[in-house]
Image (cartoon, rainbow, N blue to C red):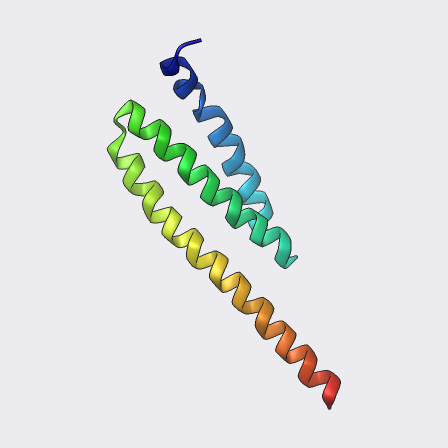
Amino acid sequence: MDTDTLINLLQWPAMIVTLVAAWLVGSRQRLKRLAGFVCFIASNVLWIIWGWHTHAWALIVLQIGLFLMNLRGTRKNAESAETDTTLTQKGASS
């Protein structure tokens, strides 16, 4: 199997990872949401590789934008965990 064929097939795992990420981000559990954002970041990388190969420049720009939003989501998810921990500690000391 040549490189072109392998990169063309890359769109399928990229799509699956994107769907798994969307499912996980919808979770109420912080760790599942974090895993979802990590999966989204992985899918962004896969889509960029595929888009570069197929010269899909708009797709690449979209994935870069989504990548930045997923980094923000990862950070906000971590911040909410810190806030939850602080609130729990304050409640325990009251």
